[in-house]
Length: 197
Length: 255
Image (tube, each protein chain N blue to C red):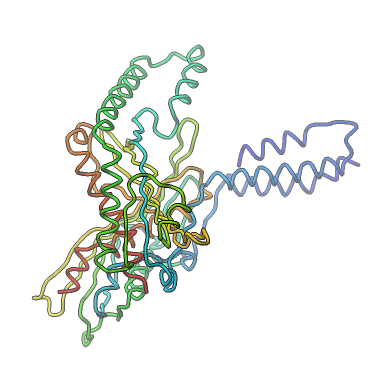
């Protein structure tokens, strides 16, 4: 009878192990993503208003929130990736004293912002004695003056983060890659010069 | 996870007559917790940073800048993520058991040797002192232009003692450390150039660190080692410039 006392633990352990080995859906709360707290030359530009068009995603997927499929594990955000990336860019502009509005026919803004997300991926690479995880983000942005005759600015920005360890760090890796990309946008002197014009 | 299950299960099947059930349960729980912690700790956390606040700089008039840099580090194709020791060990263990693809291993070893020779050649072209000067210049130019402090002095003679700097009339010291310059094999013949810079501002009176930031920057494009032999310095200068500027923005665009 003494041996029976370990059965409940064994059953629970077995269930947990089966769940982890067979895989499941992992949801990343976008509210957990950090925002930049570093200095940006965007702050040195007089306040402008940006009208955001809906961002597009180059990769064709059924689930707009899908980040990656790692083995049997499905990694997703709690909102479409296009919405999320656009929001992060808006937040960075706001943090530096600018305003944003949603696009409409009678919108009054200085610039129209369009974006195309060509990379938002996470990979786990199993090597001989180690595991590497890499997150990549990439967005192509087009900023048009209103009226458009004044000029159009187009540029791609990327962020990457590689670290050791397995699936446990996917949220942190993706966060770091996104922060790196937003920092690229925020510290781009060419973009600042264009907005200043 | 399979490993955790295997170890916990193996422990379950161990029957030590003198060990009572309670002790076994406790042991099993401890084992589960330890294994779970081990799994979680595999993912390394990004460094914690300390950001400037609007009143961080109010008491600083005269600031000293110190810089240091480490030599180039190259991760060749065959050592990617594992290290030469790991590969050597694997070969030593597996060689008697398997029919080795000798040609592939020979090519990989040759490749590692070539990469290592190229890396040495690139490394000798990098003058650490001029790199330190470069990061200081990139950092101080915008800071001086924005008049963030009354006086900013680059201390080149490696005074690293806070007391000496304080005695010389400085209120704070900014240390710029190029922790790592690396060429990492990515795919095919291509390598990516990356630098990791840390900036720290310390009040000399209290020794308190009020600004601690890290910049990890990669060159926008990847190239072969042969390309870096010719243009490595130009590429390196560009990302050092960018890293220095990014760190300076914290001071220049402080709210």
